[in-house]
Length: 77
Image (cartoon, rainbow, N blue to C red; front, side, top):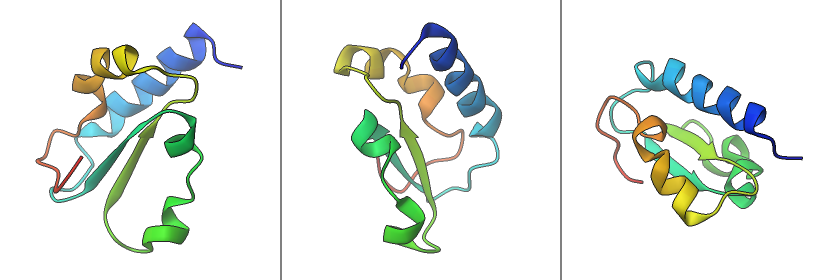
């Protein structure tokens, strides 16, 4: 179940990881469909970042966009 505490924890993790994400990674944004997607199985060694948060709507995603995107320029979002 989604809670504000869970959301805050995920956003903290996103902030902490931001500088470590290599330039050229593909960033996936969305709700539970993205959060639960087996990225490693689908994309193997390709550089990707999963920024899905379950039970999220579009307005909430737009509010967190600055936290969700890496510091380095992504190849795609």
